[in-house]
Length: 274
Image (cartoon, rainbow, N blue to C red; front, top):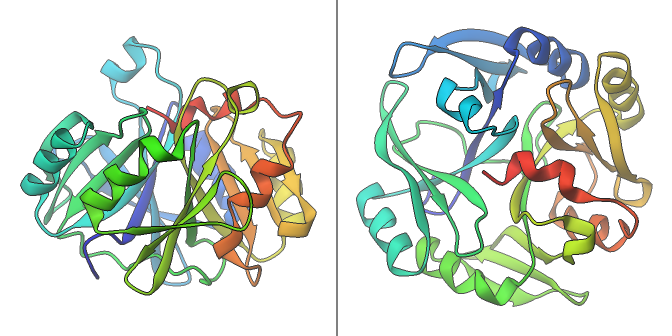
């Protein structure tokens, strides 16, 4: 593991029993009950003998201010206090100061200068995201924004990532050392809506089977790109998640979707932009 690696994702939901069943049907997860530092339940989603994601009921304070259900990306950091200070220095906003998380870690919730939210985690004791992992695993994370130039320096300063211009206008790649770690994709507001957000991608064995399962268990298929073997789904509580068929090239997960979504209102993805 290294500073700047994606290592986890979790879902803040309204009805955990409903959404747990939904994701079992769609991506094949089973669950182990754990606890948050305050004692509230936290469910570890697992498949193939591997922890894959977390799921928990949205705290009352989030409900009171009308937050939607959302998926969150977690990025490892070597020193959380230094990361939080650096985030503020480069124009970020700290929504949650460093706090204990599960048994051994600490987390902080940060918004970048355009408002996209993500979590940093210190001492995660979690496997690094595997871009070609099997079904049920987080296989990619992409950032969708209005102005890449406004946030790329922030992420370079925070995680040591370097950026390159992609092969389409408005698409940029982020590297951690020699590894392609993520994408930043500019999306017009009339398509994306007002939100800037990190998208989470989960692998599935068969995209058609996963789509049918989503439709038959209370979810929706919001958009799909057959050439990219990816779909954007919405669970019964409104959280949006990308599915990618395993074996597809996960590194190109961001750019085609955005270029081919000219009629799609991405306002459904507000859930990802707390």
